[in-house]
Image (cartoon, rainbow, N blue to C red; front, side, top):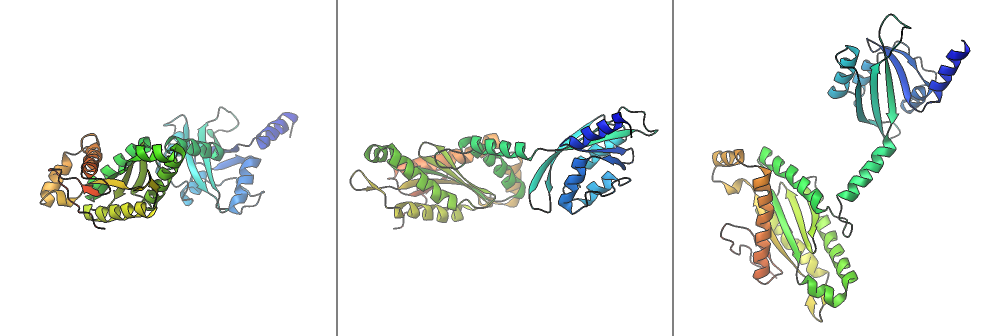
Length: 329
């Protein structure tokens, strides 16, 4: 081995990138030290002989890489249909430590072999992904309560609305408002008022544990609770429990007034049409901008009625804006 070859091998083995060279059949003809070291996570020996192993076979045998997009991307480069392929994917190592990798594949400019050769590299981007996740969480979280913010709520509502229409399932939305909150703030101070909102958020969080649920701060002292696969009657029962839980906090202000909440509910479900045929026809014309937003608007209108009717009550939206849920003490 001459000096130049030793230098190249030294450079390749020093790089943190996992590098392999493969041919047109995806057979491996070279791997560097970082590639070998990553194999240790899978119980392979550092001196494992990688020569001749088909990389595509490795991909197909691993659930993390047995992905149509990844395999098709590699095949397109090897066949000459594409000049480059890159993809991020999540790799679950046996150590249970999730690792994010970026795969890059492109043809090599070399005359060392009769067949075409391709440079395959894997870059560990786990740290970058973790930073991205933290930033994403911050941009979608209300800093005071830790609940989803309005931006995240709108995105989630869009997804749940589409899912409810697609699967013909129920969806309920609650608009929740802390009664007389300005008076509470003036009486107890803003710091105490913020603590009251956090306590209310804690109660709402306990009722949003399923994948189709979300509790969010809508603004000020207003909150929204989305409940996927929840009928109107089920939502009423949950709302009444939430109302009671807030009263049990026994937060007093302005001398004697008890902290309470008002709740407005709007629901989407099979009960809204008289037949499956009518429901299907209605769903064909629905879209989020017209009806998903409308569900929140309806809950807000129901909330308005609850406030006008004396607060500390649950109100369900109907087209006549009538009181539909009597209070029980």
